[in-house]
Length: 283
Image (tube, rainbow, N blue to C red; front, top):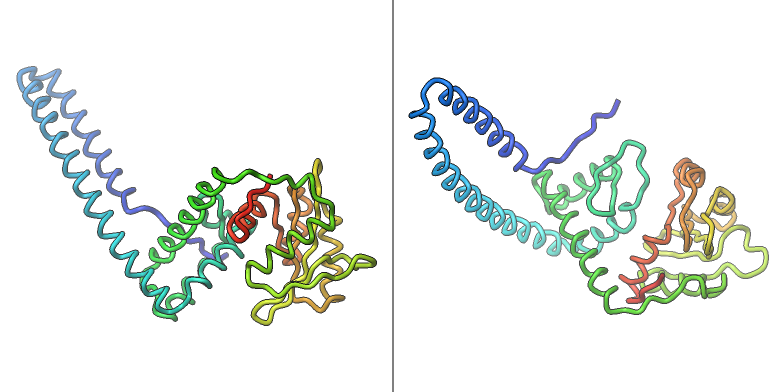
């Protein structure tokens, strides 16, 4: 069985220590209350002073720790950019951040990564000399995910959404054509008649990917869409496939896609990609 690794904030152990001290202190106060009332009130006053001092120390410690972490993060970001791998890192988040993992994986905000992907990333960044500590990888992931989500939220407030429901199937394919071009892919349409289960083919870095576009309004995308694209991968000489929908996927479709290494892009993720790469808000 593969050993699962977890990531915890350093503050967890501190709060456990504080909780332990507080429990012992209140037990001691209770004993003083029943055995020596004079001592009890004196220790209460000591406790109030101690709490004020302790809170001040905690706030100071947290500020120092935050500044130290920010300084260290800036150093790691400089290493990443100096190695010209920032685009690779962002692509990693966009490519693997929405994988459906059976074992839970590592998550932050709306992104979730399989532990094997995380371990691969750690190894690659360490080989490049970008990171030396395991925590650096998680700090980088949190930084870029947070930056992206704040940007999407900020931009979405100022943009009037366009409606997926107003698109025909052909118009949706053209929208995806523009999206993948903006993402740096070379894009080709497979043709209207007898498309064999694929609508677009995108090429980047020597990889050929088949895209199945499903413009649905009131129902989820099911097994049929995944079956079609899986069967068409070899026909179009592609290495893998992606199904993109304006709705969501059924549990059966998700399970089938996982079994066939097929990527699924639901409405929520598609909205984020359109806003990020085209600057367009869709609903």
